[in-house]
Image 1: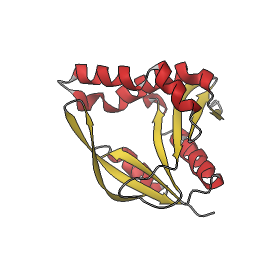
Image 2: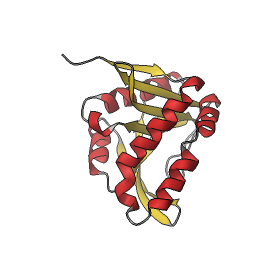
Image 3: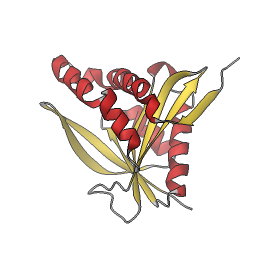
Length: 177
């Protein structure tokens, strides 16, 4: 018997759990990019996934987070950032699927799809007509997933973490009402 997936809106009292899961899932997804740069990775995790930083982000009116749980165990989360454009993706009503992380043991089980659907539905409710996201250029599995569910690649961007320059693909999804 499979256990039911529950998606719920995150509140500020979830900040600690989000910070812990964020650290763990980021490391699962990207540690291989930091070979010979362990200190850079640890610094990034310590700066990005602090309790204070996540709590402040949860309180911003343009940010909405959702938690994915199975048997009350947090296995993933996603973040929608409203009114967030990108030089390759402009418009009046743009949102960003800014974060989506799922524990590596749960990938392929529908958690990512459920989180993306929640983000897209909320973006429509907030009258966004387009969403964008960035996905690491080397993550063919994630890029294929987004293409399969209707997102399209519109170009490349880079992001620096310490001395590392990482290449990303920018993907968009036009939202019909």
